[in-house]
Picture: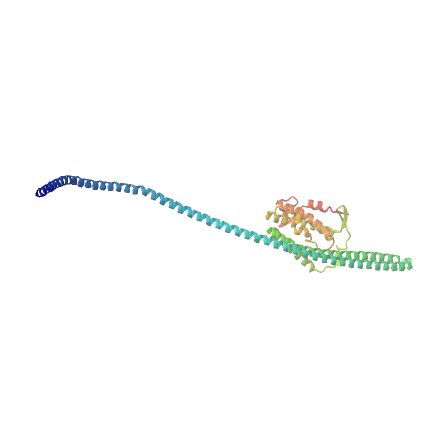
Length: 386
């Protein structure tokens, strides 16, 4: 037993020795390895510092590289802002243009409305004029029938009187022959004068009717001239109308007596032709026709000047109110109104051509008046004395 215990103790000791030896052997390599591990840690820290330094340098380089990029971004932002401002300005201009276009459309609509109103006014004036003309024509027809009845009654009375006188004259002796012949001549002269008086009354009625029609026509003509913006022509037509009215007022203020006018009953001593027919008139009638041509030339020249001043290319003497009227200078005596208006218009046509073309082909200007040339006057009238 004791021997076994001793053997066991020996084995335990041997085992302890072996363990201690193994422990020493193991501790020495561990210390040896611990020193290189510290050096490795230091080297790692150094490398980390170097890595950090290396990482810092790229950050600086990146920052330096980012500066131009920021500048480019700033320039791009500024350009974008400028483009936005330009776009806003264009939108404002577009809005202003749209507003101007809308205003122009509104003005055009207003002008069209004014033109429509002018046309409506013109149509109303035409209807009024037609109604007035119809009434005037009816009145003229009544007056003409009344004048014809009076003339027929006068002729019947004259014929009856002549028959009675002839019966009385047949009973008279030869000694009374000269006295009877003188009475007959006086009667014929009285009859001629009564016929002239009747004819003159008809002339006055026709003249007043013509003046009334032309005054009504002026309403239509004035509206048309204003619509066409022919300022100079409108001014001339107003002046012409005022001159004619003033002339009519002056004549109406005078008291006219046929018996005290030697020219009225004077014998015809001039002859002229128109439209293939021959007419006769006395000295005063011939002077009145000459006046008609001269007045027509002067008024026509001013009308042509007015159209040239208005630069109215569609000008025509026939469209002028003064030409259509043809009554300036006519007082209703000695010659028919149609005769006077015809020669007035002949002078007007030639005066208009000279005034519109600014020339002196048919007339001349002297002392503030326009007058037709004497050669042209003779050619137009073709008067011959007999």
